[in-house]
Image (cartoon, rainbow, N blue to C red; front, top):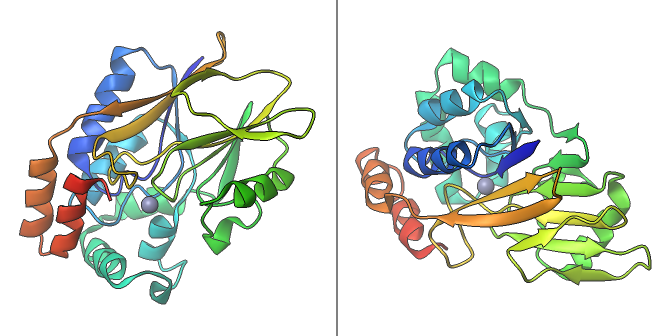
Length: 242
Ligand code: ZN
C-alpha cells in the first residue's frame, strides 16, 4: 500500500487539485486525511466532492465541526468565524452529509488519525512544542499517529528507550520498533512560512515516509477568496504561507 496523506484543505480547490494530481502520478493506493476540508477558502463543495470520490479514510477537523454547529462559533477567531458563516451558506446537502459522517478519530493500521490531539480530540488543542508532543504519545497505541490542525508539518520519533527526537529530514524510514507522531501540514493554507501545498506519502512495503511540497496557483485561490467577500487577510496569508 502507498498512502497519500493530507490535511487542512480549507476549501482551496487549486491546492487540492495539485495535491491529488501528485498522488495520482506516484500511484497512491489509499488516501488518508486529517480534517478541515472546509473553512477559509472559496470552494467548499468542490473540495468535499473531490475528497469524497477518493473513498478516503478521514477524520473531522474543528472547521468541519464548526460549520455543522458541533463546535460553537465563539471558539474561532473572527476571520475563521466569518469564513464558517460564509461556508454555512454555501454548503449543499451532499457536502453536509459527508462532513457529518466524519468521526473525531479513526484507525488505518498502522496509523491512528486525529485532527488535533490524541489526548482530547474535541478540545482542538494545538501541539506546538516538543513537550506537548511527548505528552500526546501516552494517548495512542498505534505505531504512527497522524495529525493536522497547526498547518505546520513535523515528525517526532519515540524509541523503545523512551527518547523523543524531532526528525529533520523530509524523508525517513518508519522503523517497526519505534513510534511516531507526525503532523502532515496543510494542503490549502500552510503556516510554516512555505506557501506551497504540503502532503505526505507513506509506503508500508518499503516503510518510507516523506513530505512533499507542491506549487499551485495561489493567485487564483486568492482572487476567489476576495470575490466571495471573505476576509482579505485569508487571501493575503496564502502567499506568505502564514
Ligand atoms: Zn485547519
